[in-house]
Amino acid sequence: MLLYHGSNVVVKNPEIRKPNRNLDFGTGFYTTSDIEQARSFSRIVCNRRGGSQTVSIYDFDYELAKKVSDIKIFLKADEEWFDFVCEKRMGEYRGREYDIIIGPVANDTVYRTFIGYLAGVTSKEEALSRLMQGELSDQITFCTGRALSLLNFSDFEVGYD
Image 1 (cartoon, one colour):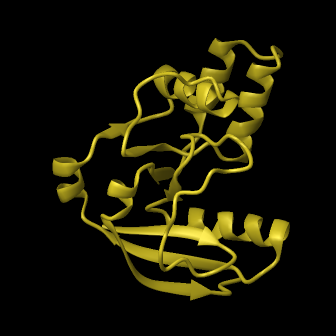
Image 2 (cartoon, rainbow, N blue to C red):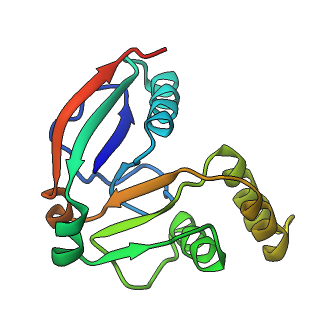
């Protein structure tokens, strides 16, 4: 399976770095199976930091990963996913840690829904209803070094706009 990582540089040797803000699935190396999602994220990163729009491409043996990794899969943006992402984004998650987490990505529209909920403007039911309406891209987050060892850099593209 091919996975993509959008950035402003080529990432041949992925690392797990502590982010400067809380992300959907916490600390980890974020990828997606959707190249357009990776390109979109690359644009955002370049707008913030400069550099060239770059998507790094990796081979990932999902069947092997299922055998040797602890994987959490969220099939859709449901209440379990919502609670997990809220807790991770607020830095309040105290549950089980995983090697790899797979699930929907909270895009800009979804992020606004989270902000409304966390600010008390939107009820949980209303937020979940809004989330169920759209098609969300996926994110595959590698949370441990063991998981990252299953990701093999294969190629990259630069300047696709």
